Amino acid sequence: VAGVVRAQVLALARARGLDCRERRLTPAEVEAADELFLTNSVIGLWPVNRLGARTYPIGNVTQIIQAALAATRAIALAL
Image (cartoon, rainbow, N blue to C red; front, side):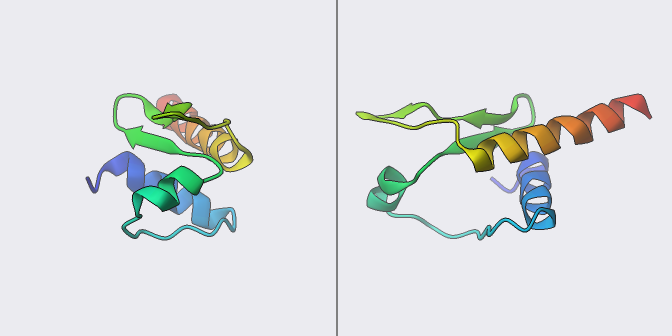
């Protein structure tokens, strides 16, 4: 879903020089990923710890974007 938080995450990632592209992934590509996260307007960014039998760490990209999103939300609340 083309949501607000997804758009924020993409913008924050690009602003930090992270390679981010929107495209369809095969199940094999998802399983081979180093880290995964989901976004939504209630939670913001939610790291995926397990998908099927595979576990995923909360990696550097997830942590960078999580921190940036939290900072953005804190600034918005302060206004």
